[in-house]
Length: 64
Image 1 (spheres, helix red, strand yellow):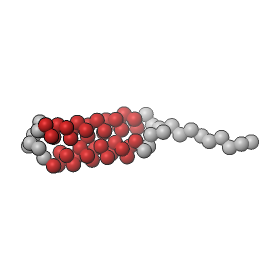
Image 2 (cartoon, one colour):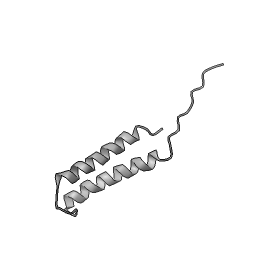
Image 3 (cartoon, one colour):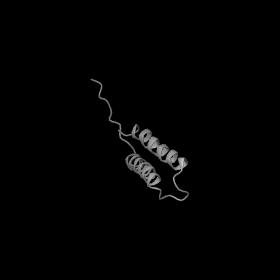
């Protein structure tokens, strides 16, 4: 008998988490540059947005 590879299936939370992190990170970066966040334009908001985008990309590697 031949070897039949099994298909990997992602958990149900992977795709929504990935899209949420990517969307929230992008929104935070945009809202930071439009100066709508409390405290004005701040590099910490930019860093937080970039961190969320990076977390979304890392989560995307778990998607099968």
